[in-house]
Structure formats: structure tokens, C-alpha cells
Amino acid sequence: MCGIVGYIGRKERAQDVILDGLRRLEYRGYDSAGIAINHGDELRVVRTLGKLLNLESALRDVPLVGAVGIGHTRWATHGRPSERNAHPHRVGTVALIHNGIVENYLSLAKELQSAGCELTSDTDTEVIAHLIYEARKSGAGLIEAVRETVSRIEGSYAIAVIDERESDRIVVAKNGGSPAIVAPGDGEAFLASDIPAILPYTRQMIPLEDGDIALLRAESIEIFDAAGTRIEREIRRIQWDPVRAEKGGYDRFMQKEIYEQPRAISDTIGARALEEQGEIDLDGIELDPKWVEELRGIHLIAMGTARHACLIGADIFERAARIPATVDFSAEYRYRDPVVGDRHLLIPVSQSGETTDTVVAARAGRERGARTLAVCNTQDSTIARECDDVLYTHCGPEIGVASTKCFTGQIVALYLIALRLGRLRGTLDRGAVREAIVDLRRLPRLVERALQSWNAIEQVSRRYAHFSNFLFLGRGLGYPVAMEGALKLKEISYIHAEGYAAGEMKHGPIALIDEQMPVLLVATGSPTYEKVLANAAEARARGGIVIAIADEGNTEIRDYADDVLFVPPAPEPLSAVLATIPLQIFAYQIATLKGTDVDQPRNLAKSVTVE
Ligand code: M6R
Image (cartoon, rainbow, N blue to C red; front, top):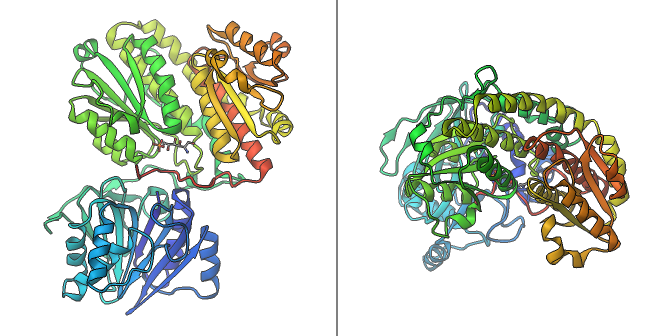
């Protein structure tokens, strides 16, 4: 969380590039924002509480002119959101921005205070700025001062530092779960937490690795290791299209991203599905058939929405490839001593590729010998780089904090992997894979059709926007879909919503059901459809209001539900993708009616890079 941006290059340009970058990174946190610009020998800092708009209006009257600068948008960890806790932190001639957590900041703060330093914020970050400045006072150059300082920090950090006495450079350092990329331009250089910040300016980037310290000057980027030895890092080409990171006429990114799903799914299938051969090509990822045959299990790990996709994935793996599959919260997996080794395939799933819990859990599995195959949306992110293999979802940048198109993209990617494993293990023949491919290729058009019900869903959502509690129920694949629907609603509308396995309803949650607690029921075609209908009847018998998600053409469902949101029928597991669409739209419309900030809901950040 927290977005960091930096620019060095042409005079007068730094503020504009940094504000633009912060706008594109605001999904990483929006508790406060700040900017520091070096102009000649003078360093100026402006910080404001709240969203970036406040910083923009503060700078409107008194712009900061200069060719070198850094900017920050904060998601508060240590110290409540306030101007004094906002970054950049300035100490003497030095200004610093930070994403991450300094675990030993209390002992460092004590040491600094005993030496006479006055700390003016409640953050863990401020100690870094003091240590760098102290090292500068003792005669170290900026890069040496940063190197000395980071050797004393425990925790994770992506920092960028400028100093008015060395105004031709920015020093960047990275360690732990805080991403940082640096990028060369034409007589300029950039740094950022994420690709969207630099998309309009360059097609090249270098993701920094743990322990890297980068020296950015207008004409050059040099990278050093912790010992100060120069190292070479490969320049990567950015694949994302800059236009995809714009709202493109939509009111909100989330709306645009919901509408983008047909394209995102179609790009994720891409050339991987070989219909004629009845085979799947996972971008050339080699899986030894003997190893696949002897696999003891697949472990899927993720957080939030990505974990819901994993729950669907696990079901698909067991059915298609007959391999036992488990799903864990990454945050739990790493601490629970899982039985995992070289006969296991570990699949971390992540939109950002930077979720710390997932990064660390994947490392833990890998250390125990598991082969890691990431499903990831962000090119060259930490998870993508560290895993043995990566199968990208080609959903394009997802800016709305609530994940939508990446969820359905992840289901499709997991399905492709399952089909491949099924072929390798002989549990699926070519004909079965061919049929699956035909269905997959139809999926984007079916999603388009589901999206055409937007206005109808809007009408239904108007009737329910005033309720304070919702129960989402589903069975089989409908259960993770129900959990995802509940998560979407609570994230963006702040309405209490729970997702339950419909079969569990009678074991407790049914006590909650009354006319104040609408039930959204996933009732699309599945082997348990009749049982789901029984659950609808039970809820209604207790005064509950039922809104069903059902297949077009289902005529009996109206007898079981007060409202129905129809989707085109499709075979499992693709029906899970289709059932998700109305739930995304329902949450979006309710949040819009309530007037919440749909793209940047309170307390959340897009990439959770702290534990
Ligand atoms: O980037 P990741 O997919 O690893 O993120 C995982 C979760 O933080 C994310 O899905 C979160 O739950 C979203 N806000 C859900 O909309």
C-alpha cells in the first residue's frame, strides 16, 4: 500500500509528472498525499490530508517548479492520517517517501532522540529520513547515506530520497514486500510503485529487487547492491496499453472494468486454447507428464477476491485432473506448517503480484520444494518473477480497488491449467478438451449478453439499496460466487453482507433471516440446483426476501424468488463466471445509489503490501 512516484529530467515538468503518477496510483492509498521538489538548491515540500484532490488544489495557486521530485499517496499504518504524518518527510536537506513498514523503528527512534533529534510525526518512516540526514551530516554522499541507513532497517521498504545539496539525483532503495520500479525515458528517469504511474511516459522499466539501491539521474539509471557494487538489471518492455489505464468515457474505473470482461477473458484465453488439437498450451510452460502423474496435490493460495477464484479453481482441478486441491488464505498458509514438497504444485493467484501475504507464502512453499506456478495479472511483479512459472491473466490494468475483471480472468486461467493437467494425466481426452475450448471461446459473447442486463439489474438494485444486511448463498461453484458477491457489496457500499454455503444455512445463518435481510441466491444450472431451490423456499418461509441469479429461460424460478437476475446459461465452471456478473453490477449500483466512492472505498488499498 502507499504509492510512490519520482521524476528527474526536464525543468518545470516534475510536478506535473508526479501529480499525474499519483493520480494513477491513488488506488494504493488515499489517506494523505504529498510532494517534494528540488529546484536548484532549494527543496520544497507540500503535504495535505485526504485525497490527492486536496494536494492538487494546494499546488494550483503555488506550483512547485523544478526538474527533480518525489510524491506519495498514503495508506496509513503507523500514525493516523494527518498532515504531519503525510509523506514526504523532510529532515534538514533531505526529503523522503516510503512504502512499507520499519519494524525496528521504536529502537531507532529512541536512539535518535537520545542523540538530540526531534521527531515530529507518529510514523515509522520519519526515522529513515533522520538516519539519512545524520549520515549526510557526517560527510556521506546521498547514496552512501542511504546505503548505511537501509543496512539498519528491519522490515520492508521502497524509499525514494532527494537532497537539496545533491539536486541532480534521486536515490531509490527496495527491500521486502514493497515494490519499486525505475524507468529510463528520453533525458529523464522515473520511479514508481506500479506500472500505471509511468505508462504514459515510457515503455521500459526495471523492477528493483530486494537489496537494490538505484541512482537516478536524468541521463542514467545505475543500480548497486548492498555492498555498493554496480549490478546490471534487465530492462523489461511494458506490455500494457496506456489507453487501458484511462477511464475512457466511463463514470468510474470499476464500471469500465466490469464492461471490459469479455475482452479480458478473450485475451486470457488468447492462443492458449488449441481447438483442433484438443490441447492447451500454457505459453510453453513445460510440465513433465511423469511428475504431473505423480502429483500428490495442488495448493492454491491467495487473498480476497483472488482466493474466491482459487475456490473455484480447486473444484475444477479435482474434477478435470483428479488431483486433490486445497485452498488457503496466503496469510494462513505460511504459518500453518502445510504438508508440501516436490510432489506438489503451488499456485499463488494475485492480480497485483505484490500482495505480501501471497509473496511470502509462495516463497515458503517454494523453499519446501513445491513447484510454483503463479496466476498473475501484473507483468514482472514480485510473484511473477519469483515463481517457477507464471500464467498471466491478460486483463490489463485494474484500477478500481474492488477487483472485477481479474476475478473472472483468474477463473479462466485456472481452468486452462486444469485442462492441461487433465490431458497430461489422461483424465481428459482430446474430445473433452475440444468441447471445453468451444465453450470457452463462446464465453466472452455470453458475458457480453449478461452485461446487457445492466439496466434491469439497476432497477432491481434500487429496490434494495436501503437494506443494511444481505446474505449471499450458493452451493458448489455458486458458493465462492456468493462470497465474491458479498465481498463486492461490502467493499464498495459498506453494507454488511455475508457469503455462505447454502447448505450451511440451516445450521445457523437461517436465524438471521427476516424481512430485513434479503438473500441473494446463486441458482444457475448445476447438479445442486434443486437443493438451491429448497433453500430459497426455506428462506421465504421465514419471511426472507429472495433475489435469485438464474439462467435465462428458467420459468419456475419466479415461484421461489421475489426478484430474478437472469444470465445466459452455460456449463460449469463457466456458469460461475456468468453468475458473477450481475452480482458485480448489483454491488456497483447499490454503492452508486448510496454515493460512496466506488473506485476508492474507505480504508482499502488496491495492493496490500503489508502483512
Ligand atoms: O492483488 P491481489 O489479487 O493479490 O489482491 C488480493 C486482495 O487484496 C484483493 O482481491 C482484494 O480482496 C480486493 N479489494 C477485492 O475486491
